[in-house]
Length: 246
Ligand code: MN
Image 1 (cartoon, rainbow, N blue to C red):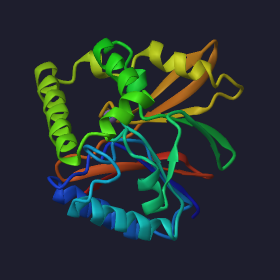
Image 2 (image 1 turned 180 degrees about the vertical axis):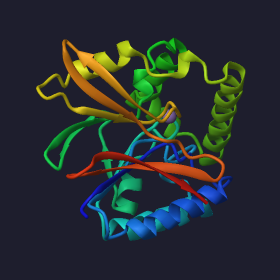
Image 3 (image 1 turned 30 degrees about the horizontal axis):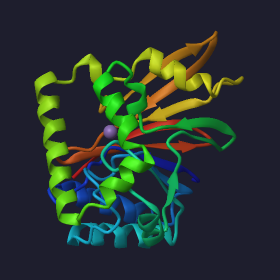
């Protein structure tokens, strides 16, 4: 059966061998068998620039390039891998998606985002997001030597980890109703598109209304430890959730 697969928040790195193997198995299974693979951000736990030539990055790039020779591959930036650029896309055959992407699949409209823009109560993060997505900020970052960028990325990761463990999974890091409606205002139509995102690590299906028009929001499963998950979309069943474990 013809279907499209969506994943997000794999947070792959050289420190996640079990997840890397799990993902490699998925790619082999999906290659040539699905219509397209959409990765909705934070595929990598960190991305310091397309010139990163570590063994891990080279291996992943080869895997993605093999896959993309047979099956269309789309990647969106997350808040960890927002520096993925044109050289990465050229090396893998992946298409980089804009941070808000509207598509039609099997006759139904969808809006795809990473999800960090929906967490509107996290003011400190939204400020960092604005700054870090600015072309000048990114150019200044990418102009630093690779070794220095690796140190910076480790520091940013550590900050984010200690903040996470201090707050737990507090309300502040979840998508807000206001954030969801503000985004979907830009896509108001009858019928409303279905919203799909990751980032919050709170996989679920939510129902919303915008000015009386109902719509559904799917939150993707994050990958951690030895397990992950993905969504499929096809003509018969619409959006379906699947769990994976190593
Ligand atoms: Mn994220």
